Each structure stands twice: as C-alpha cells, then as structure tokens.
Length: 360
Image 1: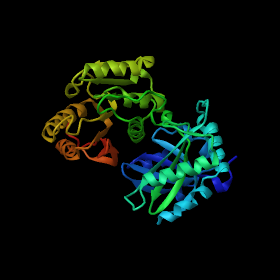
Image 2 (image 1 turned 60 degrees about the vertical axis):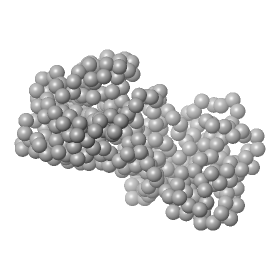
Image 3 (image 1 turned 90 degrees about the vertical axis):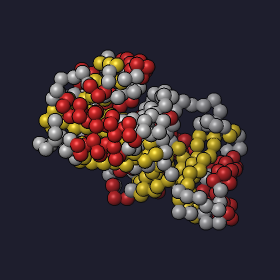
Image 4 (image 1 turned 30 degrees about the vertical axis):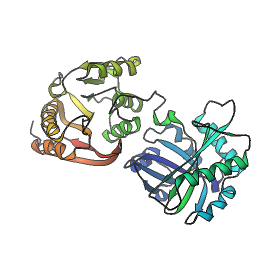
C-alpha cells in the first residue's frame, strides 16, 4: 500500500517521447503530469494511484521508472548539508519494497548502491559533488552497504531549475531492453523507440505489416509484443545478410518470414500491405544527404504501390528534408510527426496515410 504522500513517480524517456509514454500508462490523473527536459531525455513527474502503479513494469516506451523520495532546493553548495534529512533509512526501505513488489529483481547476496545525477543545464555545483554527498547520506543510513557499479540499489538526483529531485530507481535494464540482450550492431534501434513507432502506427489485429529495412528485427519484435498479429501477417527483410541472420535469431520462436532483399524493390504483391514501419538510414556514418534524397525517393515510390488504399507508413529519420521531399513527390502528407532524440541526434517519427491524391 502506497501512502498518498508517497505516490510521486518519474518516467525517464528519450527526449520527445514523454507524451507517448503518458498515453501508454494512461494515468487516472492526467492533468498533473510535469515534463522536464534534460539533455537527450524527458523526465515526467506524476502522481499515481495503486492501479496506475501496478502497470509501471509493463511500459514499453520508457527507459526507467523512479519513485520520488523528495526534493531539495539547491541554489547554494551549503544546501547539500540537508541531504541526510532527505535520504533516510525509512525512505530507502520503502524504495526497496516498491522495487521488489513491482519489478521483482533478483535478490543480491549483499546490498550494494550507487548514486547518479542528471541535470537540465550546467550549474556552479558540480554533478560529481552532488553524487558524492548523496552517497555519503546513503552510507550514513546503511553503513554496511557497499558502493558498486553496477549496484542493486540506485539513487538518482535530477537537478532541474535549481531543485534536486531525489529518486529511487525501481526499474533495471530489463525494462529498457524489454528483457532482451541489448543489440550491439551500429545504428540498432532502441526498443523503447521501436515501441513508440508501433504505438503511433495504431495497428489493428489483422493488419499485414512490413519492415522493409528490419535490421536485427527490433520493430518486428515490438509489433509481436504489442499486438495479437499472426506471424503470417508480419514480414521483414534487409539488404544486409548478417542483419537478417541476427533478426532470425532474435525472432526464431515466432517463425517470421524474413528475407534478404533490396527495399527499393519489395517482392510483395501490390495493394497488399496495411502498414509499413521502418527506421530509415540516416547520419554521416550510414549515408549522406544526397544519397538519402535519391534512396528515399526510390523507397517511397516503391512502397506506396504495395500499400492498400488506406494503408499507412510510420517512418523514422533525422534527414527530414530528404523524406519530406520524397513524400511531396508522391503528394503524400503526414498526419502526425513526433520529434525524438536518437543516439543524441534529433530525428522525427512520421505517420503517413495514403489519400486519394497520392500518386501511385
């Protein structure tokens, strides 16, 4: 049972995804969500009912979940002396209890801890100094706990507008990687961003879905986890044979139809696809603007012929000019656009729906 005074939580998402995460959680009190912007991330602070809280471990668009222990005004270094009053034994035990009941971590042989600080901008009080003082406060409450990295217990400080929000990390890497091993392939899409793209697609149970440049299969994996689609309705492929092999390993239990193909010439019947979801190549490491302009135009030209009359595409890229040029060539308009930080770069997720004006 969570007391009303202790029902403040925080959701950490990649920058731009706070709204999608709030829609996914759908809390009973939607009006009191405070969104703070950090470099590369959004932090949403909200009050949750017990019913809301029980859904936290099932979120797909969130990197981390925290329980808020309290706040500390921090405009001067002398204010750090108040940290032991804000980080007390009872609060730490409450955080451990919440973490155990919501996320069921493996019980460590010996409790260990660490403290981290994120901030919205640079301040005269350094993050390292704040983290050290936080560690001292935790050690004062539990002298036998050891500092480790990684550790079983993490206390984070979010230093925003000269206020230090003290937060107990409830989730672990299982949430952000959806209980899978992280992909080490360059340019691999983070699961939370892939999940956000699938949310935006608003898929129906019998939709036929294609990821033409599936890489290691992250988007297809999220479709399976979020929808009840038959594997017969999911198709993926990539021009990179090694990527297809990795995708097959990731998705082996689902018997998906994965192919080695050229996405500019999809080997599927015209007017047969409900939705195309794709992380397009972008960034200096993978392509140039001129290459993208030509490639995107070829992709869109082919893909619109594969979509049904009311088909749609959900596409991610940082090269928005090249994509919008290709869409305009086919008289396509986007119904929705969501900006998101991907590997430290602002990109956009587009939802594009075919209309009667679309050139096919």
